[in-house]
Image (cartoon, rainbow, N blue to C red; front, top):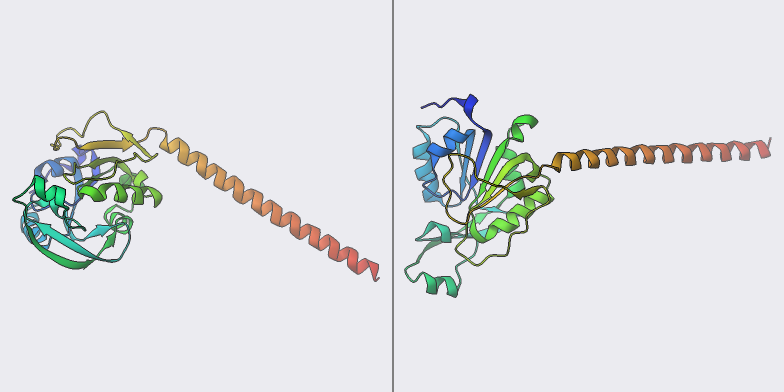
Length: 242
C-alpha cells in the first residue's frame, strides 16, 4: 500500500508514546518515514501486525527517558495513564474506574539516542522531521533533554500531546516557538501544544559557528605566539653561553 512520497511535507515522523491506535493514515500522508514508539509490549504486538500492510512504518518497543537506567513501566486501563510513575491519589479520585493492569521492569532508552536512531543521516532530510511527544508528565523533561543535547533543532515541528496528570509547565526552548497552526491534515486532541522551529534559529547557529571558529583561530594564534616566545627565549639563553 503506497502513497506518493513527493507530496509529503515531512521526511520523518516520530510518535513517542503512540499507543496501539495511532492515526497511521494521516501520518502516512504527512511523512515518508514513520517511527512509532511505545513501552507497552501489548501495544507493540498490535502495531507490528498493523504495520505489515504499510510501507516505511517502523515500530520500536522502548521506555523512553532522559537517561539510561532501570525503570518501571506502569500500565493502566486507559492508555494516557501509562507512565514511568504510578498515578497519584488525585488522579485516582478523578477517574475512579482507572485500574492498574500490570507493571514491568525495563531498561530505559535515552530520548536523544532514540531520536538519533530514527532521524535520517542526510542533514537536509533530517531537518524536515516532525516529533509527537505523547508521554504525559514526561513531555517537559524529554523536550528539555532534546534541547540540551542539540537534537531538537532538527525538527521542523514538535507537538506535545495533552496530559491528564499534573505536570510541570512547559517552557518553550529557545530553538522553538509557538506555531500558528498544526500540520494540515493532522487531527490532534484539544489542548495539544504545537511548536515549530524558531525562524531565527539558523541565524543563531551560524553566529555560534562563527564564534567557535574565531575562538579556535585565536587559540591557535596564541599557541603559536607562545611557542615563538619560548623559542626566542631559548635562543637568547644559548647565546649567553656562546
